[in-house]
Image (cartoon, rainbow, N blue to C red; front, side):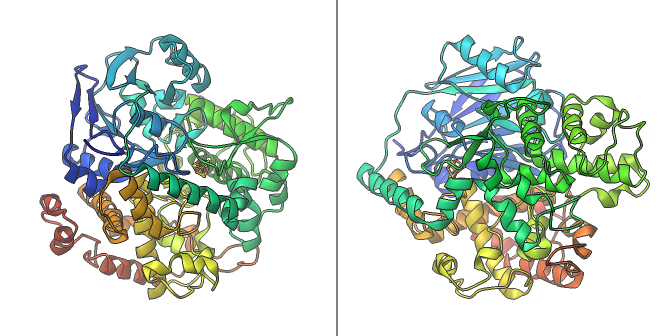
Length: 635
Ligand code: SF4
């Protein structure tokens, strides 16, 4: 009998209606752990290359991990994965909240969904049972009413619901999956994959307790984690201000994306800061399952054109920047409204903001006119345009909404006339709100992420740029020296390689990035103790980090199989160009240094230095020789 996890996954074929249970071996669980690791294993095994991401052949995986749901702060995340309709590459996104733990309590570690339901449906999972139900009365509803209706229909207010919103139904390519109306698997368009399968939601409820190998040790670690969270500086800031604390921090460093990444300082930063939120519209600090950090924000705007309900949470840093500084908007109420709308409709706020940024820059340069925008001045700084743009995208309304719903890569190609230079994406996924010109390791991270531009592939450069306590946090990896934030030499590549294994492991263990090392509370060396206390496995940091490396490598092979390679591991031209203002004015990323760092990274990974194809030996070392057949003709 496994400890800490169920040892069971659920398989649902929406075309035939068949539901099966499967019990993967302990070797599979220990090799891939869960989350991104387990999901990429199933996608590579079962998804043939070249399928239409929005076709019934695509496979959608919801995966918790072997430790998701243990009562220790931060052990809460689950992954959703599929071939991405936004990029055509590997798609994966993590979310906290409550759905991951509930899926485990309901009796399953993961759900694999194939096919397409004949009619709108949702999946109901409870205490080891599962059924596909009609979503006839739910299809078309915003996320709030849909969640309410599912709970009413099933007669239990404690049911947890992960769903695609109306944007997913309409196949917006950056539609997200959202649980509890505010915790999103935001990136790579996985809500559209749900929509394409006529699957509106998964509802889960479980009352069975999981057994742990060493409950006393687990209690000890839970107490240690709670003590660290209350004392460790970064976690104290996170509790007080949430991720919005980053607005002023990044603005001071000159890397707050502003006006479509033209500059890194925003004159209105103070007005959209975490501090201003606390003083004005913050109603409560909220959290995820069993987490004492409580970094989530719930905001309320009582009246006016941007009246906002706290039910949908509040904007995170990424949203304050993507719907704020990126668009030159310093109206906190309007940004909160934009955030609420994205959560009501099920849209990724990062991609939505960057899509509107594309429209604004095209408008200011005459590539779009009032004839395209229903008479609205689509200029930077216009909050009305931002809010209206989100409505249009979610509904695929007006020509412009339908265009932007395709993501900036496709939209810019359709606009033509050079619009591509205003489309800030990598592999088709819109840039997150971090400017790599002030932290070049993030540039590598953006370019190399298998999901397209992503800011949570590795810790950012700045905490490790100077001597101090933060550097001590990565010493167990042998990373002992400070490396300047803008350095792009061998030391930076080494830091990136080791640290992206750590963050990849986060995704396979379902650990929230804000609760564990390198930057946050629980130090790296405690992770093996935690996994042992839960599962009983006599593990080590070495074994766990190998899972991180294995998962990075599997996603690489997935993308190579789909035709991606070195040509796609790059940055938009704008990031090689100099910043137009702020303390880093005039600084860009050096193309030669970047290309050299990329080659060095491939070599460090045991990949071919030309195109980043993993060698036979590296696959063998990672117990991934079964992937060799996918790389025929590529070496
Ligand atoms: S730190 Fe914040 S996001 Fe992470 S689990 Fe806790 S409350 Fe959720």
